[in-house]
Length: 86
Image (cartoon, rainbow, N blue to C red; front, side, top):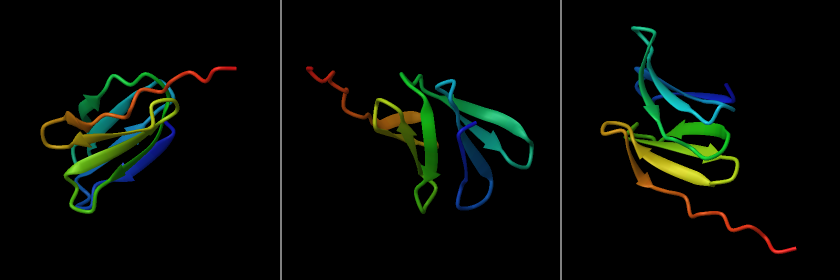
């Protein structure tokens, strides 16, 4: 696990991991409720919007991806990374 974030209401916990996963957890039930992705690279960070409706995920190669927490749908994909010419 590389990062954890509680939702503003404290009901959910989001985790990001080196295994390219982001998971949502029910704090009270101590159970996973969703897995968001797939992600192409390590997920380094997660944070909820102030209203808890959106989860931002920071990844190693794919920038920031935004997810609608209720629908579990990606609402803003990161632009594709282009390889630098050497």
